[in-house]
Every structure is written in C-alpha cells, then in structure tokens.
Picture 1: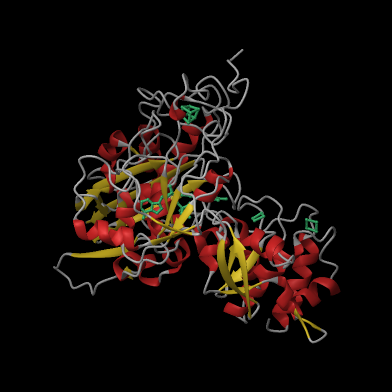
Picture 2: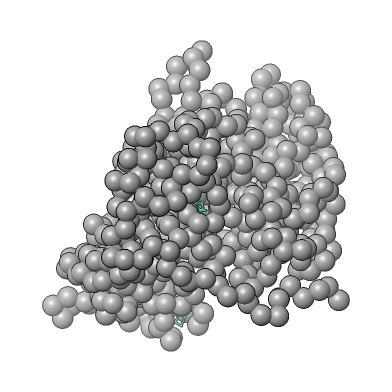
Length: 209
Length: 339
Ligand SMILES: Cc1cc2nc3c(=O)[nH]c(=O)nc-3n(C[C@H](O)[C@H](O)[C@H](O)COP(=O)(O)OP(=O)(O)OC[C@H]3O[C@@H](n4cnc5c(N)ncnc54)[C@H](O)[C@@H]3O)c2cc1C
Ligand code: SF4
Ligand code: FES
Ligand code: FES
C-alpha cells in the first residue's frame, strides 16, 4: 500500500490579513529583499502604485449597458460579483474552475468564463450576460431558437451555450454550423441536449444568424 | 480563496517593484486561468496580486511581424500579454509558424484562449493532481515524498531518470517555441535579460522552485522568434478536444534544402518535467529525406531513455506516433489521418 498522501489534519491555513486598514493600501511594505538592486525611481513608482483591499473596495461594472457599483473584496470573481452582489443570476456557477462554460459572459464581445476572472479586472469593460437577451418583451433569436427546438433539459448549461453562440454570430453573422460548433467547444451539457442544439443552430445559420 | 491586496501597475518596472523577492507571498495575474484555480484550491495563497492587465506597453501587449526581406535577419516579437486566441488566429504567424499557432489553437477552449496569455502559458504551474490538492504535502510542496511515483501517475512523465518530482511541463506552446529557436525577454530587479527558451524551463523538486528559472520578481516581457524559413509542425495526442492537456506532443522544425532536412529540432511535450529534446531522433533525421519509413524510425529513436511509471507506459507508443506525424506534417505530406 502506498502511504496515504493526506495528512491527518490540515495545518491551519492562514487567512490573516497582512495589510489591514482601509481599502487603499500603499505598497511600501516588504517590497525589496536584501541585496537587491532596485533603483530609487522604481521604488518610488511601486510606492506610488495604490493597492486595493484586502478590505472591500468599490467596484464599478458595466453590465448590459448599466453601470453598477458595489463594495467587494479583491478575491471576488466576476461571476460571484454578478450573482451575489448585483443579483445578475443569468450566468450560472457549476464548476467554478473554467471547465464547463455555464458562467460564460461576453467581455467586450468575447466569450470568457466569469468564474475565472476577478471582478475588479472587468471594470471599464462591456459585460453582456444572458439577461441582455430579453428586451422590451422580445426574446433574442438565439434563445428563441433554443426554446423552439427544445434544446435544453435541466437548462443549467443553457445560459452559457446561448452566450457563446451569440458571441459567435456577433463576430460572424454568416458562420456555418461547423464554425458555430467550434465556438461551443468551451461549453458542456451534462443532460446531452447536443442534438437539439444542433437543430437550433442550423436554423439560425439558415436565417443568417 | 485567501483574500489579498490587488495592484494594477501601468508599467512593467512598477510591477517588478511590487513583487516580493521570494515565492509565495506575491503573484502576477495575467489571464488568471491558472492563478485563480490555484488560489481557489489554496495551493497559491498570495498576499499581493499584481495585475499585468493594465500595463500600457505595446512590446508587452502586441504581436509584431516585421517586413521580411530576403537575406536579412528578422525576428517576430510576441508580447507576453498577448492572448492565446490572438496567436492562434494571426494570419502571418499561421504562415510562418504553424507549429505555434496550431498548438495555441488547441489549448483549453475558446473562452480559455480569450483569457489566457502567452506569458501565463509559459509560467503556468504543473497539473499533477497531488500538487493541486490543498491537503497533500508532496515533495514539491515541501513534504517528504513524491506521491505520484507509486501512486496515480498515468498523466505523469515517462522521462523520469534523475527526477525526484515526475510532473510534466504543462505548456503546449513551449515545445513549439523551442523548436523554432525562440527566446524570452524578461525584466527583473537587475534589469532586462534574454533567455533562450530551451534554457527557460527546469525540473523543480522544492517549494522554492518553479517550472521555470525566473526569479520571483521577474516578468516575461515578450518572446522573440527568428524568421529562418524552417518547416515546422506540432502534433498532439489528446483524450478530449476541450479542457485537456495533450497526453503527448511533438513539435518539429527543420530546414528543407534539396529534399533533405537539416538543422533538425524535435521537441517532445507532456512527457518530462521540462520540454524534452529528442536528441537521438534529431541525429537520425539530420541530412536525410523525410519518408514515412524514416519518420517512423525517428519516432522509435525519440523514445530513447524513456523510463515510464507504473501507469503511463502507453505514452511511449504515443511518442512514436506523435514524432512520426509531426515530421510528415512539416515535410508537407497530405496525411490521411488528419480529420
Ligand atoms: C481547462 C483548461 C485547459 C487547458 N489546456 C491547456 C493545454 O492543452 N495546453 C496548455 O499549454 N495549457 C492549457 N491550459 C493552461 C492555460 O494555457 C493557462 O492556464 C494559461 O495560458 C495561463 O495564462 P494566464 O494568462 O491565464 O495566466 P495566469 O493564470 O494569470 O498566470 C499563470 C502563472 O503565470 C505567472 N505569469 C503570468 N504572466 C506572467 C509573465 N508575463 N511573467 C512571469 N510570470 C507570469 C503568474 O504569476 C501565474 O503564476 C488549460 C487551462 C485550462 C483551465
Ligand atoms: S510529481 Fe511532483 S508535484 Fe506530483 S506528487 Fe510528485 S513531487 Fe508532488
Ligand atoms: S462555472 Fe465557470 S466554467 Fe464552469
Ligand atoms: S440542459 Fe442540463 S446540462 Fe445542459
């Protein structure tokens, strides 16, 4: 029997907050090790770079054209910020590790995993979530095709697939079914509704996106 | 995830100055596709996270393909902050360096490629599941032993001799870039330096070592690839088409003159703690015409020195196939095994 890799109990993981105080922390501590040759100018620059956190700081995101500001700790991901702080629950949290696609949103038009990005990094960018696909009582043609072809079962993966597909047609309205499928390679459906999604995307390709 | 202070410097020098001079307390954040995973697992617990995404320096953020005039020495510059998707889709890079663009095009999935960067790809941590388990204290994390050598090791190294830690280097771009003769330009506490990518990686076995040789407060600025008119290709064997690292990869580059291959480079990925130079195979192909028979022999030769673990003997066979197919692809064969 190989020795068990698990130690009997986990050593106390430190969550102590090194730099306490207000949201803004100057990076003047522990910058330069002994024997290092950082120039005075570089030191000055580092000190001039403000830090955010670890206490909650203001985060302003542009979600579906609306600016929303919340107070969050730096460790909050874009996905958790949207869902838990902004009540934008279209993007789903499934793996939280960048391996399923349920959290897909468009960032400046490009599909990304919201679970794998810090919310603070998404400031100043255009974030499109599934919520943007229902406006003035009108469902966007991509989710409409999903509904028409019954391309979901539990529906948990659907918001991610819909956003990835929308991103694909936004980029190339004349995309072929094979091209659209390649755009969906970063999304997985555990219920296996791929065949119905194929019908949906074919109908969209025929209509030119 | 342990909480931290977040910084967003606008110059690389300011970023260097923000980093600590020992591993563990500060981390650079590029696309975050690896770092956030490590933080969620408490494998990385930095107190400071220094974002590179607000650095305003075209050398770091852009691809530059100079005008290539015959008889002159030119090099392509790819900023470390460039996204994998941009590399995969770049028309001129595709023509010059298909080994690189094909490797970039198969990484992760579209979302990962829209987020992940070249610098992050080269500096990402290994995928050993013992390493990535918060509760396992293996050799690389300062523990007493490597759990993979007599544990679950089907995705680990087959070139294991002399390596107390049997990870595979996780970068798919690295073998292609080494085959192309690329080098990395970095900036650190003592200024700039340029490192051949073949000397960029190391086999780590202690917590104060990474998969590369950079010091903790050193940043990859860009990768430079000489334009030498080499035929080149990368061939990967994978389980799945998304969310996976290759089981085995072979990247090759050579000059084709008068039907003969010279200046042959054959680099294997995902089989050793660093990208593995298949010296025997290179020698065998040097000066020869690449035929299916020669390519198969080179595949055999590339396995020289392999010492697989209990569960990964299958990778030896995959090396043979990957080398053979990469050589044939680069020589311009129209293979029927391509989808
Ligand atoms: C599901 C999945 C599948 C994948 N499949 C593959 C695959 O097949 N092949 C492959 O090669 N990769 C694969 N990857 C890994 C992916 O390519 C890397 O995660 C990505 O390239 C890292 O880039 P990043 O910009 O997100 O890095 P980050 O996560 O931001 O950083 C990664 C590490 O590199 C350091 N770093 C970042 N930039 C620099 C720099 N300029 N200088 C010095 N250090 C730096 C960071 O401090 C950190 O330690 C996969 C990832 C996922 C999640
Ligand atoms: S291969 Fe390396 S990282 Fe994995 S268990 Fe062994 S020592 Fe740890
Ligand atoms: S929840 Fe983000 S990819 Fe799975
Ligand atoms: S419909 Fe259930 S996961 Fe896709």
